[in-house]
Length: 532
Image 1 (cartoon, one colour):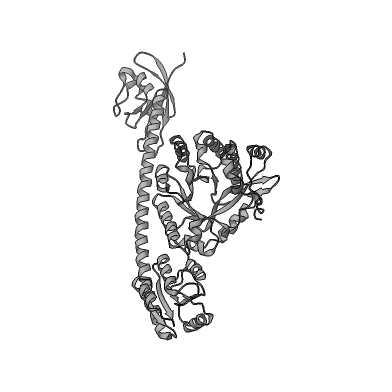
Image 2 (tube, rainbow, N blue to C red):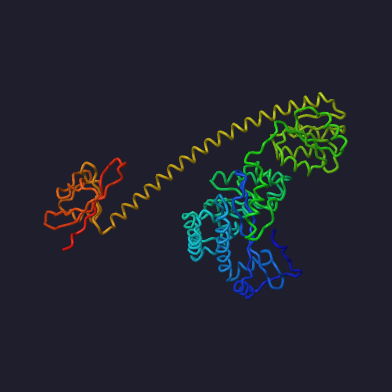
């Protein structure tokens, strides 16, 4: 079941602050969820929580009707905390029925990080539902990041240290994007739906999508394509290496109870992690259906997979959905001349080979297209089948050479990236180990109880401040034998011994054996004064 239809008031709706107060106190807020699918694994990995208002007069309202007024009201913090708590409660229910870890994304105004209320509430809610911080992603609007104070950035970074994920929403719509990424390392860049939906037809939008995906990859972040509505759009973002996607192609937003079924549906909409591509696919575009039928007959019996289209929009959809190597276009078409169409194909899919097949000869436009590299060959109608097949064979040889070179380049880049990631992971583990060791040393020094480590040869391996004070003049340096009154401790692991210091004070030494597999094979001794 999808979410109910949203109502749009006929006249401008400007909610008052008292209405937000009433909505919060009487429980008029609602959440629906839009699935997010991983394009590498081919399965749904979570959902974005979307706020709705069940208004007593206007019915169910979308955020466009009230979110701007809400963000400038004193109720924005209370509403955001409610959204966060409700979304995590719903996530806990979904997780019980899922065999892989899910996450939920929640939109949070950057201004809320100016106070320290949100962070503790989030961590408390995660603990309450036994969820990992990695399972929640807070989406920050790119437009507001530039005004975030140093204190707000610090609170965001503190939450990231706990493992909470952060995303920049609508990335690419503001000039400050790169500065924001450098100021605030993030886990996800979400590509604005306007770029995604125009990418099949506009070179600039396709380039922006590719750039954002590459930027995300270079900083170790995910890239999420928003607003996916067609198979062509999905195929495009998957082909450029986008990590995840969401949109109506996977299903409309649903209530919490319906999300498990929606996640299954979204998973079915994602092609497998590797899209099988026939060896050779060719696309013919011609506004005359009889010409396309004749071309199919000419290629019958060949190993080519033939796609046909009668207009540029249909052709761009097919190009996005399939791994097409050669495009053959008529020159004289109503919507766009063939050389112009092939010029746009060259910009969007530079590895294709492009051929004009036409009975109409506009020498100037064709010559210009050839000079610019848009067209690799010109064939005339009526065609000779053998010559057509030879031209296609030659074009596919060039395409396959380019693809192989690209595959080798990508393989080398992936190998280098994996090596760099492995190195970074090792450095990170070493840093964590050093931090843990320093913390342990500080903790041991702060203990009021004398603690000593004695190796298997009776030498002092460790002593905290309290132990140094106890030993006093008898204090041994690390690596030297322990004082005589403690020398027999190593032979009595697991026992509590009575020892006397040189000044006659009696102490009880508790001896703890280290793991027998440890190379030191020593003991840890805690020393307490014996009760009188």
